[in-house]
Length: 306
Image 1 (cartoon, one colour):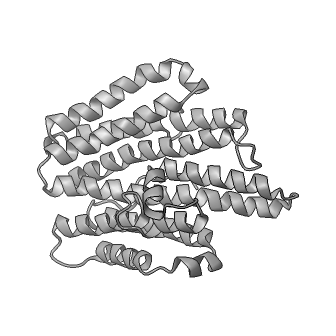
Image 2 (image 1 turned 180 degrees about the vertical axis):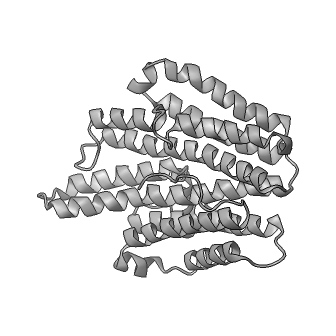
């Protein structure tokens, strides 16, 4: 496969996944606005963030630009995708325009954010259900899970960042209120990655930070966990069919092993925030390696801002 076609397929899938993950992160903030919390955004700040990450043409990571880039990459790789997938990506872009023209979404973005998630689900379903499982398919899957790993780490880390900020503020504690806010925010994190019901089935107990971290970092059967994502990255790198184990496979295998054998309790003592930040940096390095080794480029396209 030509490297430029592989690059287009890889980034088409990344941008679709990025749009969905941006919608998920915004939904966490939408729910946080409703909480009586020192770390929740004020309504005006949330509306500003919403516009910036949904419809701002000047923000390369906005949902608008992510879906535009996905469509352009799909068009560039048109000979390697079937009609069903092209129609799915193209229709998503066309339907987005009238949705954004109606200013009502800024007052209540829930329906728009849900629409973005559903269109992303549809993209993956069409790809899995209709495409030949050849190199084109595996480059798309590789892009999906690289992006998803990055996003899950960022979503999970957002709560630990807020916790550290609260501690630094040294405000007078209110144990009952803090406990209630903690539960609602951890629950919103789980909802953001479609894991709330999974948590209940797995643990059948109250929501605790340690168990949320374990679920979203180490559970291989949790679809959006870091380990599940890295398992898929490794499988798709192997399926691409390099004759030798290159740097990308070495980095991906190392990341998977670190996650698989991580001791969550010990990591909590050392600091889970530092671990997640390190993971995001390693995923970025893996993306650079894949770009150089397989896609014929020196640097990957811009990642989400820190």
